[in-house]
Figure (cartoon, rainbow, N blue to C red):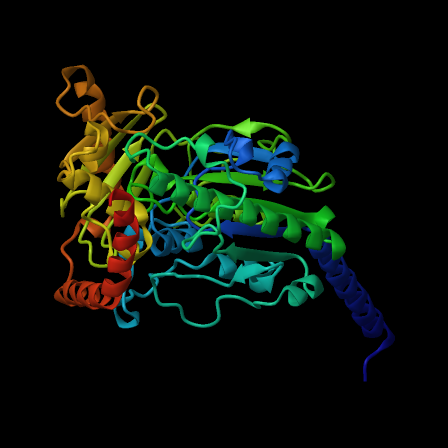
Length: 483
């Protein structure tokens, strides 16, 4: 039998346990929810970034009350490779999951000890969700190019999030992905067409459709923010709004120019949520950031620590280390056998094309030939000698090396390789790239297996055959403008 002394000890222990559980529960309840709202294929083409053609009041207002980031770059200019990095905070090239896209059996396993972000967040006491069907959006898209064992997310339901806090959730929108919305009220005359595209009604109409889709994404963001209010989550939810990679245009998506890799980022902290030292509401942040840094910062927001294996780094803390260079990579995309790497500083960008499979326009997948009128516009106008020298460059073979002065040439049209005045910059950035390839253990520069070569070759043949009718239909619609 238990004596009186032991009974008192047991009772005290139970009280201490109950108080600690209560304290832990209170601590978890006070921790903020974290919501990522992710657009597909969208450059910083928003009102708050200076675009006067779009109408994006919801994101603009979020930026005004939150923090806008001006120099954020994804690790790859295509969805599955960049989302692979965004899932882990590790470059897709380090994971050996850099192509777009593998068959299921060719996807590599996620190497130990690397974990996906939802798992890290669960370890920090967070309920996780990739939400499907909320406020007219929500695709529950992952598109990771590695094998995942077990369940990645706790839920795909918004209702479950409301019941389980704190939560970390993603809402993925495909609104700015092709096909686009009807141009609607977009003023085509006011669109600033980049100089490497023909200033032609076909191009203006395509851009108008894209901008109309950006407007609709903004409406989705507004509806999600309203839903946070309705469910009384707005005062305790940190909101991110960003894109997976750049705009879905020829020389944008799939390419290492800023038009393919620079993305918008807004982070909003509610007034009463404790903020890190580097966060300043209503201010802008212009230091270089990689998208994998969002993963690291999110772990810290949850009260965790950044794992030693993670290549992303914090950017809102006292001890945050600024980046002086951004590294990006493009590898096989469908039937296009490419391997390019870029390193970017504030002022310059160096691109090395380890493979030169053809011109930019020629390196267009079957899917994109069926969806992109500007691909056909360039081809037709090139045949008719109607392109400017800058536009005609898209029909010429890729150079092995490219170097651009981003301050004086923001559209990256004047290749400075061979210009003696930039030899020192060329050497500096080339050395940085070589160092990064070695230190990050870039598997993309290694020779592909026979199985991968075969898979992508067969994929190219089958999709070209499947899309042949759609490709011809798109070309015919553009040819009508020249009859």
